[in-house]
Image (cartoon, rainbow, N blue to C red; front, side, top):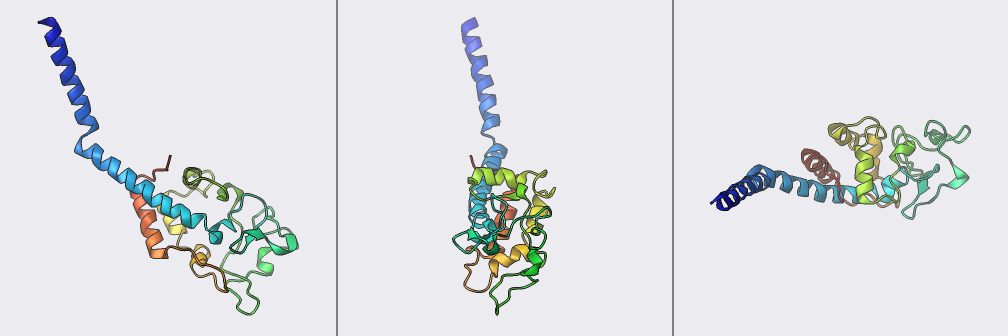
Length: 189
């Protein structure tokens, strides 16, 4: 009888534990996390496109074109991400694209801080970097979404010249950012 009672008690405890693991709330959270990771995988394809990586390079120089070739004139980051003395970004890049000279432009043209380098990262590494408030300009999820609609970032959707724009429409991209944030900003494994 003692063994039977122990077995029944153990079975009941396991049942209660499994009930908590597989409760509707936990299944809903799991589904949201899965949707968030799927949304981030699409977000990452945008953030690792040439339009973004050229200004979020791993090194200290911006990149050019769809191929990510070195910037002409050996331009470097400089102490404030706006170019070295004598080679400031705004010496060539204005607040809008120049159709005459084909030089791209948007307000506040600059390199992203080195802590926001995305080049060569896996989707998981990119996700963690994007969420790192010490390195992302102290932005939470809502502030990241807001940042993705600034004129400088929006340039990626309207790069002018023969440059390939970001592949996902901006409204869809923002919707993906919202799904990811609402799911708790989960990262791929």
